[in-house]
Length: 161
Ligand code: ADP
Image (tube, rainbow, N blue to C red; front, side, top):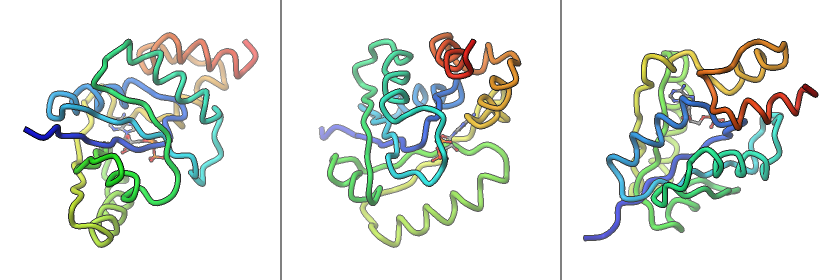
């Protein structure tokens, strides 16, 4: 049986329990999930690409089927290069839908060999995003329960605490 590999792309600036939930659920469906951190994201990031990768590795706690990597250029090229057939994306509020719909259609237009699989957020994480975590943490608000302890520590260090 060929191994089923999925790519879970994103900024992960930083990784949250919402991302981890999607990764763990992805691992129940696929043999392997590649967490692909985008290098060419237009967003201004708080953490460098190396810091983001390091944090993800730290919180995955040695699950061999979850692989952390970075990519730049066209996502579809990366996915095909890795021998993967599926892109996983998470959906939270309706506001995610329009953007995700557009990207998924475009990716399908580029390649019909790759399917985008949307996983609905788990209720406790439905309003959780890296942006809100950064905002709350920058104001010294509580982020326990939203991000793993290693990420909280890294946020504290970024905000000089
Ligand atoms: P991007 O910049 O590509 O949106 P993110 O790191 O913000 O990257 O998110 C990566 C993926 O994880 C996206 O599909 C996003 O919708 C999903 N995601 C982020 N937070 C959550 C959450 N709390 N629940 C479910 N999915 C989420």
